Image (tube, rainbow, N blue to C red; front, side):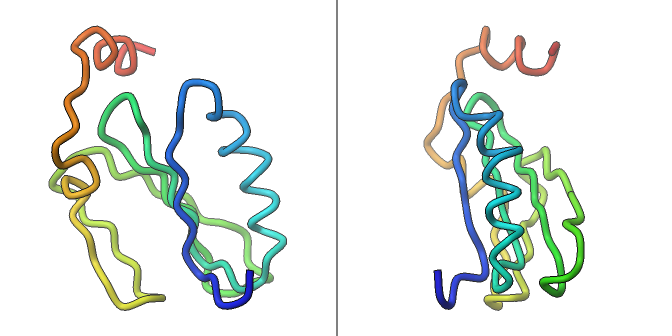
Length: 101
């Protein structure tokens, strides 16, 4: 993955464990990756894993509202969380289950 500094994953009900554990370890082994962004698919929410250097451990941040801003200084942009979910409609049952669990 030469040149890759930011990686995005969209969770599905069946990939959550893999994306949060297995892929996190795999991406940590790639020195150039500075930010790993996991997008929830059942409700609005991002988990942002970031580090300044390859030898650092990941620092986790959660962005849980559409008003939050994903800052990616590595590539010089900021994106409102709401933009990732523009046009997406969540089922009320799924949203309630996600917030209850």
